Length: 180
Image (cartoon, rainbow, N blue to C red; front, top):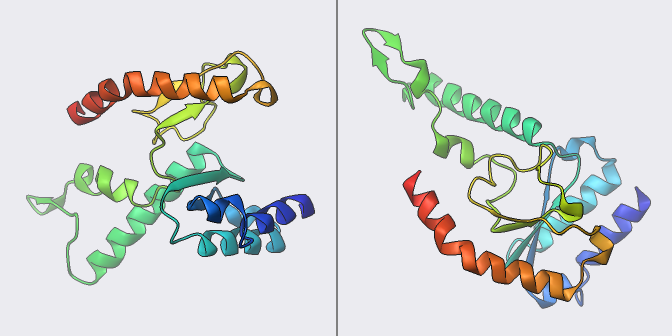
């Protein structure tokens, strides 16, 4: 954990590449599972880069998509309960005096509590064709690049190829997203 803390603290140094290129750092996952020094370092990094807006770097720690979705539904239900207790009847549709349970939580309610924004591209090394419980909600309209080599072998040419393929498929993905 000390190595992780050291690397996180290196991200927020004034001369770091993160600040040089305006990268906003997000740590996504159940940060409560991290040791306190690492969790505090992650929180400092997110706070220090909150105004950076050129690129978002999402670092997944203690993360599973299933846990994220469960947490999001819980947060959405808590919000609805709080608003309902205030008398707002937020999100509740009553048919014949009964609450229509299908209308309690909407997609927008869920998406605002997701840990990470929708990525444009995901690079999954070693040719794996599955997401393995990773960003399942957010990757519905994401370009997946699946090179057959391991991560350390990926070089600039592979990144360039991934970006060119993303650009080629971007309009198609946007059209599909609008249709949904």
